[in-house]
Image 1 (tube, rainbow, N blue to C red):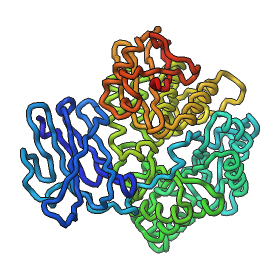
Image 2: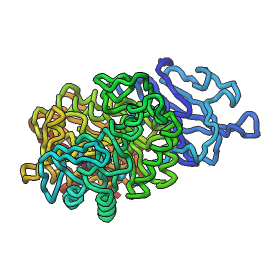
Image 3: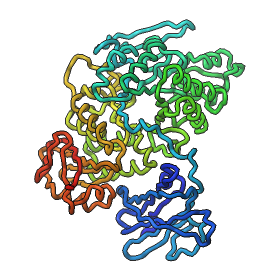
Image 4: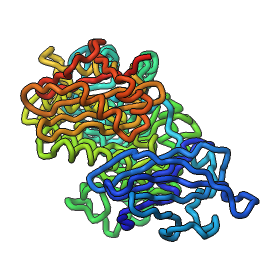
Length: 597
């Protein structure tokens, strides 16, 4: 047994409360090393000594390239739990507890792993609606200025304080409003808008007034009406909050530039030296050394209070449903804890998404964000679907590692996307091959996490430079895969397993480029099979039945296994699979798993 690969971390993604009576426990081992893993747990304040322990078998929940991950749910009346593990590799059996490994458990309860108390305040509380959404990401300047139209002309507005606001393509909030029927028809039920507050540049990440709507985009009344109409149509609205930095015409920064250290706002900025040099690069801290984006000092209580007021103001004023928070990983954790508390006080089910490009575990333990932008997902899809530099086995292993890095509900709420306003269009990574792009989007809608579509992806937009991937929405009626998007989004909406179900790998064929996985919840099991390659593929249905029956997964047992005759029903056609399941080049299919009564 490779003991060095065994890992359990209390009070982490390896041990967390799902609700007040359910404790999720995970254990990592070397891949293929352990035959059986068992959890023993008891009441850590049991008055009897030695305490009684209960036994629970652990199921293999995931496997990556190096490790297996075992998991079980402790459903009991205990609020205070101590526990340890028994590992069996077929040759030796070892107990694993807080201190070490041993052949016999002789120590007392205080040396077991501990979950001190399941407190309701510490349970990760993600809005119930979050897992059900499909997001449409809109860059306002580039989307629409009218019904199926974008004027495409730059704009310039002089503000009362002498500053200037600019637009590039002329998109407006009213333009978004006039095309809500288009968005709703896609099946989308959440809009994420890049910044809409008063700013100098067309992208609006250099905020001048956090309490005003940029005049190039519209008015406060336009935003309120947009949100109202969205809610009427069952669509949530998430705004972009830029709190790491401001713009050059933000009142506090203008005062500091004028008065230097004598300004009452001098400490509103992070590492502001004297003299202040407003140049490229600036003498002060700024976002990516951009002089027009000075870094705010969110550790200053006055700044924190101001920005929290911004966060709650737009909920009270316009009834928005949440925030996507820019450059979230460069802001202190205490600020985000305060921001969450204040926002949730006003709207208890507000959804908070942090822009963090790397693993974000320390932001996702229930006290800061509900979700983050899942760049890992986009990287893996780029390598597997677009560039073909990763085979099926490698893709599956890294996807499973990605899922297991966070607690279960957090993984389900991650904002998954293939492209955004900050990266090239996914179709460009595909070399213009629309089949590859479509298969990647098929996976986006079938996989674990909240799917996000960047405006125009359904119209086959390409672009590798900023001006190209933020190009105008093509309203000219050209080619589109919107129909396929609608179909896949509808499947996701109709089947809870695709929104909230577990994820289990079933089939990996590197030579054929074929990948099969199961999404399963208590109500149903859905099997997804995709072919990431050229030509046609025919797979024996009986082979898939055997794999589902033999998989070490609870979902397969719920489906009935091959002994009961697993049946595959195509969710699109409603037809039962024949002797062979056929897949075309770069095609994905979805099946409902049933057994005879």
